[in-house]
Image 1 (cartoon, one colour):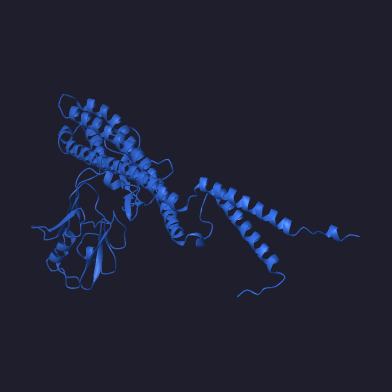
Image 2 (cartoon, rainbow, N blue to C red; image 1 turned 90 degrees about the vertical axis):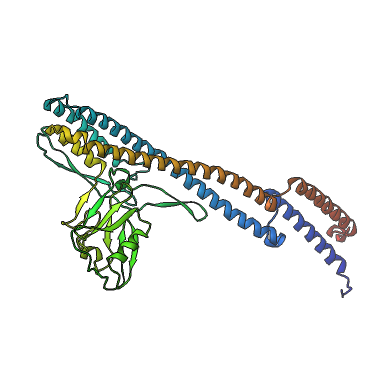
Length: 415
């Protein structure tokens, strides 16, 4: 119930004016911000949807930037791999020419400087730096030079120190960048995969028939952790390695009964014991307390090398006049390197095309979510201006009426 008093007319008038002023201010704020939701209570359901849409739009923009950055890196990576492939094609031509048997030893020696210079360019491509200053082929070691050059003298040399060995110092892992909800794409490639020529095989000479895992442990092969259980023998170990998904096949050597490891594609094998149980050390595959990939035991025989190994062998064969190797093993190594590099270029191109497809989809999603956000939160400017004019007229009319009701002023009381 309302209490009737002499102030009721004054209070009602003030209350009505305050409500009209609030409506005017609210409409002005909406027009200024172009947003129809000024407070959550204006439309709680629409406000909840709008917050989710804005959050999703922010994620889409982040995914789009990530994908664009990845595609830029893929283009740079592909250009260096393509350059390396062209160098290998030229080296293959020289190898075939040198193996014809029509060139003398002096003629072959004159070809060696070109091969040596092309080798330097291959190393330069392997140590390439991207536009952001990151090493392209060093894996997660972004600022580490992936390929270390060892200089030395070779028989029949060129009168100066030449590249005698190229060692990989990068990482095996790759950085994964999120390009969509829980969807990732690798940002880089390990150099010991791109610049590898042949499938690598490790031959252990340690008899593994009596091997037994003493307690629960694990080993790491090519970055993949393989759990072992106490009591596992060498056959269980071989089964677990072959079922791990690593691009590698394990088997027992029929002659030495040692554990052999052979890759199923061209890359360098990384082996590591994860604790003091030293399973791989016991099997005669690695040295204790040394880091991969150059931690192989001295007794392990290794087959299959890198592209650099093939080119170094080619240069040395030219200097020594070994035509048989040029047309046999060396040519085979170059062909294997070309095949692997072509596959890696194709893989990079496929990732780039996926990135382009992702960008197209993200653009469509961005547009759709923006439209949904506009429907929930954006202001209908025509309706807002109409409301503003109506409220202004109402307010002016109220002031005019109240002015007539309260006609007395202080001037009426002056003598």
